[in-house]
Length: 135
Image 1 (cartoon, rainbow, N blue to C red):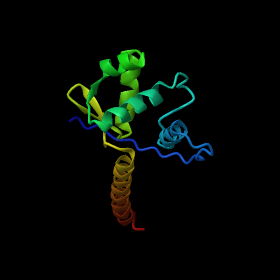
Image 2: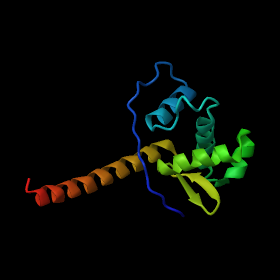
Image 3: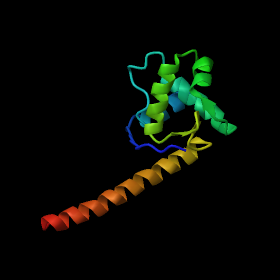
Image 4: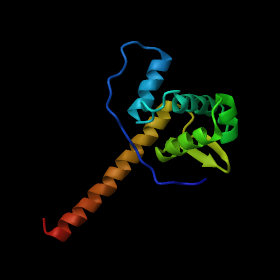
């Protein structure tokens, strides 16, 4: 398993009034800063959905398989996979990718722990800096 530097983005957005699975999933992804207006063909969203489906069976998939399944270029898929890896949502094993958790609730718990750990490390560093500065 390859680890990369993680960038956690949380975007506070209004939850949709209309409750459909697609609306909820789009809101979920937007809250994690995954989807942007530049993604006109919703390729990142569609890739995220495929990874969620694969997570149910803990299936690892390659970028080639995902590209073929989604009708996207491998370059587009790899671009989005890198983004999802940097967000800490996707892991790579060999040349195959898998969602970090087998369901979204566990994924959110994992993200929460990552944020809390990062905040604790920052707090410790801040205390050391304050002491060095005599504050």
